[in-house]
Amino acid sequence: MNSQNTSKKIFGIVIAIIVLAVLVYAVFFSDKDDNMANDLTDTTSQGNTQDAALPVETTPVDTTKKPGTVSMYKDGTYSATGSYRSPGGADTLGVTLTLSNDVVTDVTVAKGAGDNTSSRFQDKFISGYKALVVGKNIADIKLSKVSGSSLTPIGFNDAVAQIQAQAKA
Image 1 (tube, helix red, strand yellow):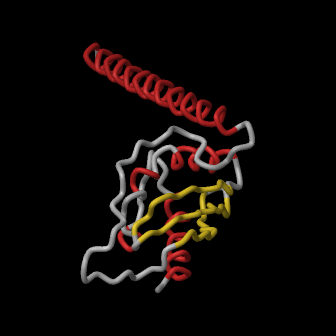
Image 2 (tube, rainbow, N blue to C red; image 1 turned 30 degrees about the vertical axis):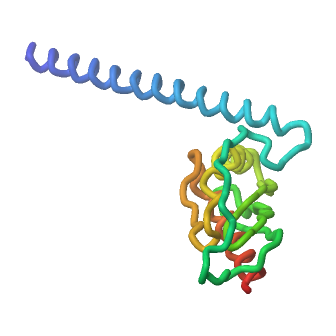
């Protein structure tokens, strides 16, 4: 009987340690995400909803046509609004993209979040998407998870598909 009580006590202690570890993990990462969202929100709270997050350094883009290549898309600046569904409901993301010889030379996004959580994830997306897009051939752009945001890229990809249709040569 004594060993049974000892086993129950040990089991209780193990469970308490696991619960404590989960709580510490949740608090540490929750604070980190909230601070990041606050930092990003502070930069966008002045009314600027386009690319207000961290600056992204890009390398120069060679947009000269190679001999014998034909552009699939007309040069120019195009805009579209992509949509996607999040747990909070319908969200949108406005995309303005500049093409030169099928290569994206500039891109901006405008938030269209339906709630605070979606807004936070759109901020995360804005902090990291440019490096994945500028300098790339538009036909090759298909984003998945960006800076921890997995749904916002769906709206971005929707807008890019619309822009591809608009820019077809």
